[in-house]
Image (tube, rainbow, N blue to C red):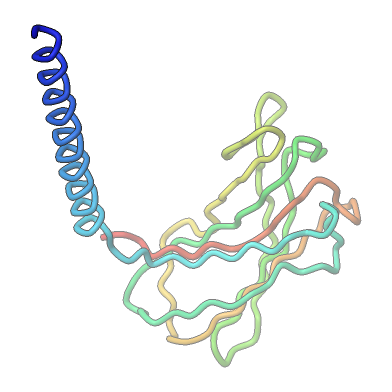
Length: 177
């Protein structure tokens, strides 16, 4: 008789535990979804990265693209985004960066970007691949014209092709108020 009561109570406890577990999982799921819904906001970010064939960036290969600016009152930060391997031979990279406003000619600027020092690379690394985002405007920039902007990035190092570069690109990020 005692074993039958133990079996019934064990089954009731298991059923209650399963029901409790389901209720807890349901409550946690509802809580997580509500956090996601209320915390989501549109990020005003553009980023385009161009793959460098065979990780050898030829001087005539341009990382280029376009982005659209609709808010001319907002200020934006502009970043160069580079991915490189540990086998990259230098601590810096010289780039020729061009930006073209709607209806204007392209304006080029030569930049010397530091990628690290002899002890460590800048940026975020995983295994032997490093991603670096370098801010290229000293203050947030306002774009004067609404419309399609074009960018072009090329390497101007002495090595041609430049080995160890995986991707190059541009990131334009609206400054948060």
